[in-house]
Length: 81
Image (cartoon, rainbow, N blue to C red):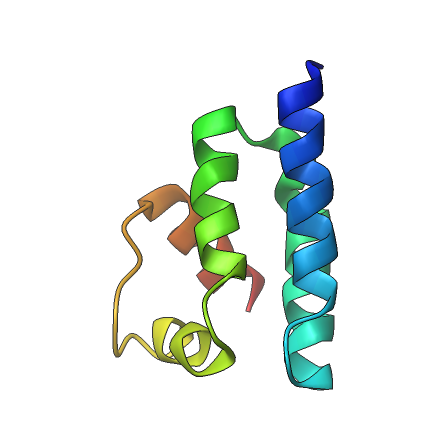
């Protein structure tokens, strides 16, 4: 694995653990850990966007109030829920 991809993985894992609310920290970090090593670099970039969204927007995504551009990540998130 190249160092750029590994750096992005490390960044995503860190960000997923320190979000805002403890409940969302647990949910998002569990989700990320379950999928992160199976994603392409493009999917990782989209996952990085997702983990940097605020908790309210992620909740809206889960409730189908707003959508997320990467359909693969969206499906994985909804299935994980």
